Length: 382
Image 1: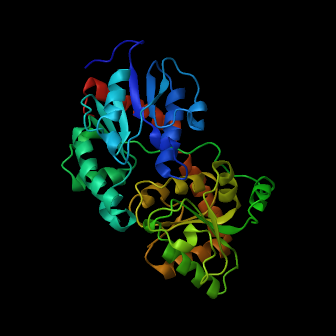
Image 2 (image 1 turned 135 degrees about the vertical axis):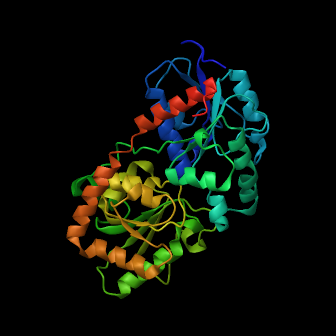
Image 3 (image 1 turned 90 degrees about the horizontal axis):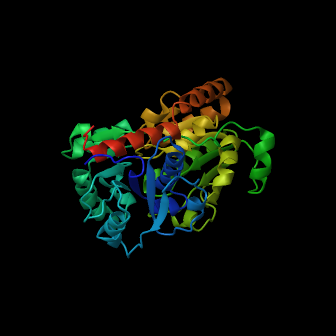
């Protein structure tokens, strides 16, 4: 297939995931689509939505023939059958971009983004039905894809280790970081934090709260830190409750055995920069990540970092954070204590994090994603 002229190139994107709140994949889609709509060139986009009236779509600028199209969502995985295929065919897209799952009846050029293979590595984080669906449909989708986008080199290697995929088919395109994540003054952060009953200087952890986020060991490490006489700062935990979340957190109650823990639930996007900038340190002891957007946002905010040494996190954080074994409670407590007591270290980590975050751009991610779309349409493997 050849790319048509200026009036004919149309890329479809299954964007319904962008309508969710508090999920990394939703943030990825929102930022990527927003950057694509601002990218140079004559390409247009058909966004296949569950709710075309969602505020995200209203925020997008006008772009040529680009449009938001309702693709009615069936129950469960029904849309993977024919709903999305019919919508893509009706709109006449030249290629379709999906996350993880390709519609079963789609036979035109296909781009699949795979964020991670967590369903293979931390199975306890997924309900059985979803885990089975991922195990069956993700490899099938990758096998059918014209091109695959992995969000980190780690994810690329993981795909190749588990599936018979041609390496040239995979493009590593890392996410970017939003401009709103940057260092802010105490005067800017204090009024926002005050609405939550907080003052600057707490430890902060954020993420979709499931078992792979390792909250149990984080709480144990924090209790050990307080018991050892470290500065008595709160541990603030934010995020959307997910499968396997401790019931006490899911209901917003204090954790009775650990004093000083503040559960924030889902923090509105507009308030997140104040939480990052108001934190004495950002703690991310996840057991498995394909990328780790909160780590990048913390670095861009100038917040010193403690992160797990597992999966893609060392690739992302490099020397801009303290890297720890997430299953070693003592090491995690020691790293948190260092953020509260070693000011020279804190200054060094802030500087390294800010410098490292400058290498991640949504504009570059969009440009490289567009190149992959065009290669898929032309039948270029990589």
